[in-house]
Amino acid sequence: MTLKGFDTRWNDFPHYILGITKEIWEERQMATLQHYYAHDMILRTAPKVVFGNQNVISDTMSTLAEFPDRQLLGEDVIWSGDDKSNDLLSSHRLLSIATHSGTGRFGKPTGKSITFRTIADCAAKNNTIYDEWLVRDQGAIVRQMGLNIEEFVLNSIFAEGGFSQCSQPLSAENNPQGPYTSKGNDNPWGALYADILSRIMNADISVIQKLYNRAVHAEIPGGKQAHGWGQVENFWMGLRASFPSATLSIDHVIGREDSGMPPRAALRWSLSGNHDGWGAWGAPSGASVYIFGISHAEFGNVVSPHDTLRREYVVYDETAIWKQILMHKG
Image (cartoon, rainbow, N blue to C red):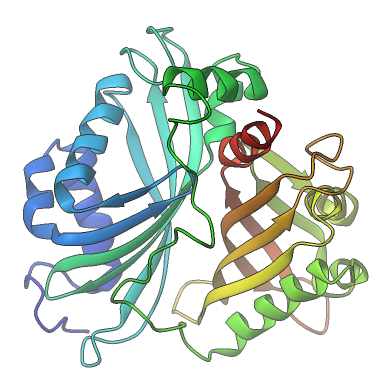
């Protein structure tokens, strides 16, 4: 595939996404963000919304100062669109390996090695990313640093000036509409995964034993893993039980079939509602909470007559959820 408007050194869209990520983070070519990221681009993360490539550069430098040896291993790029309609979007799943050897958000250097996942949805045209949604598994980092997640979030709030002055996490109200408006593609694998997630959020947990492989392997927030039907059911029920009245919104759906790869799908979604149930976040607080998630799935079969969900990767930021609950409690 020839990418119209992109540098000719990129073989295809995944090559472009993986290539510029390595240049920026591992080769320290942060100045390239001046042209790889649009001047007025919007970056949405669970903790905050970032406007403009200069602020993205600043955040990138802060992260690298704290974790200078960070490696970003590109596990997959699930993408949709084409360069003719200018709606190219990549859902890029990364596994990062780093050492906490600098001072920053997580305190003074500890020398601890950490591993965590990020999924970034990037809209690009003419060699430039102009709109982005990024979810990082901050819960995995906090736990591997040996910190209590609730205490870490509370201390972060006070470090930002307290409840009245701290930054506001992403919400339905402050989530800006950017220039990218496509909802993905109509590939059946994306539609299947969207249907599965919708059924789970509608309390049809039985869909897991119907459409997941019995030996399913899931990578879930907090740097944790779930194996088999029971553990995957417990994960999704723990989330849904905490926010039983929250509304699911599936905002972007991609399905793909590529040579040498299993059929796969990427969803960008959110849960919006109150913390009004017992579950993974303890006693109900009544807090209004917005959960911003991106998840990937791989399908296939070993002996089953039909394809089932065999691998799942779910990323949301537990610290952003705790921040909304603690801000409500005051």
